[in-house]
Image 1 (cartoon, rainbow, N blue to C red):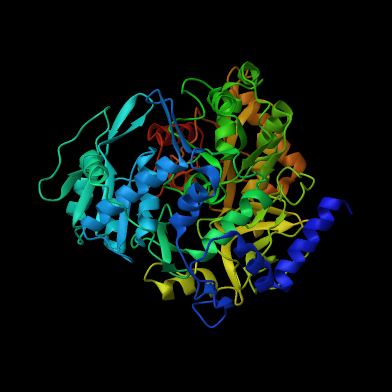
Image 2 (cartoon, rainbow, N blue to C red):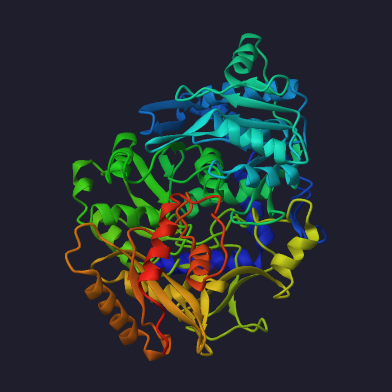
Length: 639
């Protein structure tokens, strides 16, 4: 066994054998007002609570302590916006000043410890400043992704009942301005609960009118607080108090508000920055996501700031701002050591620049590691990135509910061999099992439900916001003693975990359970395919049959019929006739959310001829027209 494998095995085994000792040591990296009375208290909550009785402040650990400990003049946040042609930075000392002032503004508006605050913002520095200001005064923030429309924002306002809302006059997308204020106004009109006040950031790209008596101009309040020397101190909170509520995307009806606590969140994220991601304090880290998603919470804002890194806040796209070399420009210009992004970003880059020619324009000598998560990293994309970057490309897997990696490759502990298609191995604190419907473990290589043995490690959800019964039902009832991930996959003989998709992405073809992820892996290996999605669509005879949707690489020479025929043959050769894969269609693009996730559920409804509604988070509504058109061209074959 290699040194890295031995080290990993010892650390992981210890984390499961002695979790209190393991996480108690990790907690020494956090500054506490009062240490925990119990590292883990099994009598609290659904499955127990971490750092019970501890008193702490998240903002102090993200900002103030670095100012005190010699990082005052180090950049904390670099804001890079190709959409507005603007690059600015905030040092840790400047960030502290801004957060102190905004915290004082909030307190003047009556916001106190335990109050909720909704943040509905584009990717601008004021958004993480608002998050940190909430944490500073003990308020609970709920960031709502700026791509959500009024109805979705209204449901979150009704659930969180915020005293205050932070927003902006507009967001900026390639070629268009998105006006936020009308969406906010309509959301408040629709919501039964009315916030006391809104603080609006006026952006120069589009200014909006403010509602008298409710709305306040951000810049004016900020300047008054600074001129008056107002400063909010860090309010002590319990480690088990909520830091934030984050609503899971795609929910209907009453949304699921995942609660993140203060203490466990800090301990796990601080531990992960070096042990999982391999970055040292002071280095530049970039998570190319949005603060509206869990990746943005954990690894644009909190994780890197806990660790004393410089974090990049990027308002742009992987392609088109201005071209498919955008990521390489940011890495080179800001000397980024590691990048974390979604596989869809690299599929987009690969489609536009299949030979990686734009990469050669930039000095990437500072760059060590690429991390991928958020959706399944198909092996062809991993292999493409690895071949061109000549750097480790590390897939990992986690969820909004956990806040950090369940399965990954622990770069700081020692890089384990990469197996394309696998997120590698369970991280310390997680016992990951693959089980059948009766919660019995299945043999290696057998697909089943992926579950995590209780108790969950620090940072994972203790509950849903004011919905504890729903939390038990959704996550802890189906597999007693386990947390249900709702993902399906398998482990190989080495213990590597292969996440093949959501459990509802396992299709049943004439009684055979088949993974759409496995078929996508085969389709993506075709030299002309840039990206793909496989769905199970209704079939009178077999129940479901798979259908593949393909996007071809730019400049692909062969015709659609030829490629479609070849991929059908590839699936038949590698999986066999049992897959009943007889249909592939080429589309110009796949419908996705603004965070890059393919809208499989909506695609399936279109394919099955069921009623569907336009998803609130869709990036390009015309992509659904492409699906409808493609399916009208070909009718499902009956086998």
